[in-house]
Image 1: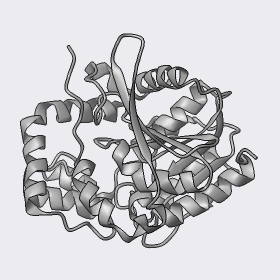
Image 2 (image 1 turned 180 degrees about the horizontal axis):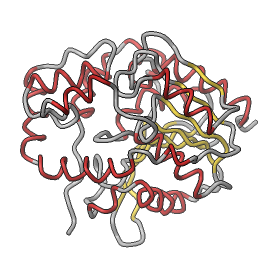
Image 3 (image 1 turned 90 degrees about the vertical axis):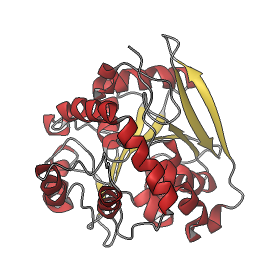
Length: 303
């Protein structure tokens, strides 16, 4: 059975993102959107900004390619081709079977997508669930990956933060909010300074979660089968970049960073203060500037 793709909360944030001051440096950025068809006829939608060595950006759970827009523009200004797909089953990509939400299957689908793009070597970065997927992909296809980056705490390493666990114990999944109060909780966990969204947009997002609650819960259950996937030592020899905000309330940085560095002992590490789970959204300039410096050291732009 084919299922409707996830329509994420972050689409509700686009107005806030567009008005954010950090967009000032990217006023001339052009983001192009296209679709590619995979082996079985199912399509993935993706966006691209800039020209140069390709950087593939993987979003997190219940998210979409749109969360990378400002970050893509910063990378484009730094001489990179920043490519952000809607992962299988998310955003504007076609519906997929439930089993495709497992990370190893996502990696196989992503490999088909990359082959369709004609990429042979690229830099790979992911946020949250996308970070775990990036690690799985790099381990599966090591010759394709020039560098690996975890932008925000990755899924699949250690337990959820205490506030997430407390909410779930109280019967509330903060990532599948079915009331305005639960949506406000989700935003407070994701952002250091939560965006002030119009109530109309918030009600529309809650209605989406309510209408498709069964599917969201199924995806949540399937994804959490991989909740220790990074703890299975997916490390490798790629130059690796870790950017994990000290104010991340989804996955706490202190203990998790130490564990992640056991697998990537030579990784370049940044743990900035007052940065939460989505640094590429809240602090796109800071995050992109540091990431571009790392890329320049390990993956120089074309002359």
